[in-house]
Amino acid sequence: MLPKNKIEEDIAIQVNGISKAYRIGLEEVKHDTLGSALVSFFKKPLRNLKRLKGLSKFNGFESSDIYWANKDITFNVKKGEVLGIIGKNGAGKSTLLKILSKITDPTEGQILIKGKVASLLEVGTGFNPELTGRENVYLNGTILGMTKKEIDSKFNEIVEFSGIPKFIDTPVKRYSSGMKVRLAFAVAAFLEPDILIIDEVLAVGDAEFQKKCLGKMKEISGNNGRTVLFVSHDLAAVGALCDRVVLLNKGSISDVGLPPDMIKKYLSSNNYVNEADYSDYKGSGDWLLTGINLLANDKRDENVIWQTGNSVIINLKYITKVFGKSPYVILLIKDSFGNTPFFCFSKVAFNGEISLKDIGEINIEIPKLPLLPGSYSIDVTFKYGRDTSYAKESIIDFEVHKGDFFGTGRLDDGLVNSVLVEQKWSFND
Ligand SMILES: Nc1ncnc2c1ncn2[C@@H]1O[C@H](COP(=O)(O)OP(=O)(O)OP(=O)(O)O)[C@@H](O)[C@H]1O
Ligand SMILES: [Mg+2]
Image (cartoon, rainbow, N blue to C red):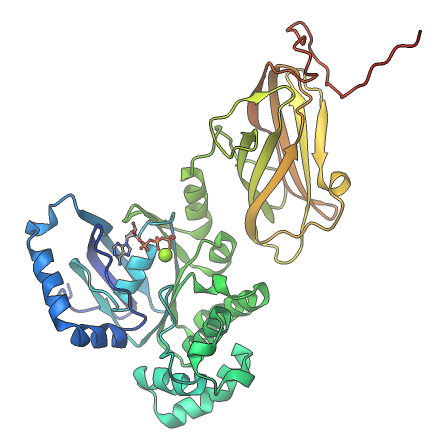
């Protein structure tokens, strides 16, 4: 057995029972870097003393004013491993990464880290806004313990990767958020930290740059055996990049495992309107349906009923691992006899190229639902060229309730097995 504060040879990060309490209503000041956190503490000693006193009044954080952003988190990250962290908004992902980057302290527990850490967090890029891009590259390198010579040898690569050579001698405060992230990623990736911690920030860059970053991260972990911690809502990227995934839920770890298993578990924990089963599909799985919502009357309200003649929306959620190409989307609406009263087919009904992101939603609005009251279901297919990516029959069942399609108030219950179409009647003498 190793003593508690010793870390095993092949482990890069050891997290032992981390918890983090925040006081509700007392927003902790956010800092971009450890440096600025320290500076701020020394700048505002009185205010911070008051904060500390205020906190200590709460005996052992039992007060209901306390919110646990992280609760009893324990895991290890191996050297060279790419660990993904996923979870809903507010699950505590960023809090955990801030603790690991030593920007904030845990309330309980301890972390042991072996090696130099570079982080890109949502709170900022770790740049001093008054300094130029060039000066910030050198500043960050120095913080990582590199010599000027070592930084010199990486400088050109960094500038080239960031794609902003023109602005390298401009103060960072004049950069757009995308430019900052570009340079920050390049700095973090090329200055060879042992551990790279990345929170979401890549979402700021454009699609091309995101792709470039994902490639670079793969290279960093693969060839150079460096450890990467990666928080993202981009499940396709998590699936492609990570060796292992931690699933966070309300501040605690709900599971740790292989990316496909964790992604599936995460998606199935989201509440969709109707019980729909997205598994056991046919196809290659390049595109996956992850959610279906039936909405109505322009309200994105989940507890709606579908009525004959009303405006309704079918909302689909998807993820893909095929970057930059879009599939055809086909929905067959089926009645309880197995007939298909109508279909929705992007190729014929949508005039233009559909351009889908890696993860997103599709809304199909049907201005006047032509179905009579009864039970129906929907088959969904994503076709990609001639190949089927995803096909599942009867993914969701739904009921259509009585409504006034023609505006005559005369539609009665006896009609079945037909669709309604708008029609104009006229009579000649
Ligand atoms: N500085 C803070 N002061 C007070 N509460 C905070 C602070 N930072 C985070 N919290 C709270 O802690 C919880 C976890 O937040 P965190 O930012 O870690 O979530 P997250 O998983 O990163 O979410 P997201 O997906 O939206 O980025 C949230 O309820 C948040 O309001
Ligand atoms: Mg976050």
